[in-house]
Figure 1 (cartoon, one colour):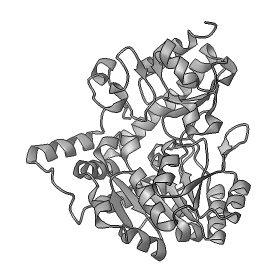
Figure 2 (cartoon, rainbow, N blue to C red):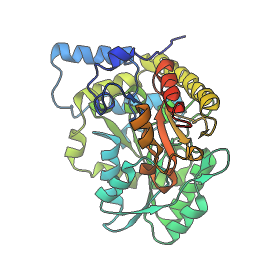
Figure 3 (cartoon, rainbow, N blue to C red):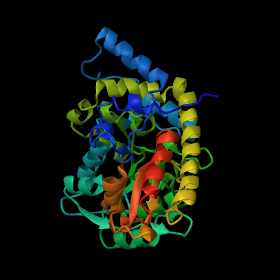
Figure 4 (cartoon, rainbow, N blue to C red):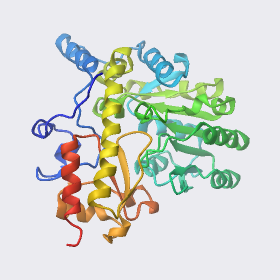
Length: 384
């Protein structure tokens, strides 16, 4: 059974990415969604070979990317998407914007479900639309889509919804029933659903993952999925994502995008994604999921022991923890004090929407040692 362990801190500090260059060396960076693990061996091999032979040109007009993802989706989700109904682009955000531009008109309203990935607000604006906020419902044990609120927004004229599944920052994997109900609502009102499924490969096995396009025929009629290997396999800098459809009309929308949208796909990103989606990388991904499962439970234990005022629920997917620190009295944006006084960088809760007041987002895709040190530093602020 493969074990995927984070690199030592000294090696991580040699990296030049955002996570390791934004703050001074005395800060533990647990803010941006980059992980501290080595690449899956199949990816390293593919990239090394590309460098050796100078395979650094433009992406080809015919590549194995769509077929690779279709095979991955079949193995991991039991979903059989059609490779002929996919196109690549540089990243999930670009795919979202390009689709939204074509399924909405300037000034129309697009539903988002805060607390949610902060760039969603910017992507809606970039597409020329307005944000319609319908917050997730806190059930007391988790979060779910507010289907009544979404219906009201659709009834009031919203023309699209930007779905985050699995949800960032809560780690919620929306269940089949709620996704099916959303699809029926969208179909009833003629609303497009653009589903960001970038964290899908990181759904824990005990929860599983339901792709939006797989739930029913209504979802196929109204839905667009945007997927990538970048979060699970730490490939964000290589630039590759897929826009996936399941219906003639939605496929025509994606086929109608300018060729430059596809040409923005990075050659290294494409090569890495093909390797990531291959069966050769399955054991590595399974090992990563076991490590993340251990880390999410370790974080729960650390918070209970050292920061009992913190409220945290185990995420269904991913390596991002949504933590409510309101009870500690550190204000609406506790990450500011934590950065200044504890030298731990967390993502600012209010950036995710008004629902993020008093919250922080913590990246536990790291080593147990770094995670433990971070919580110890934060806990030392209590009573100071």
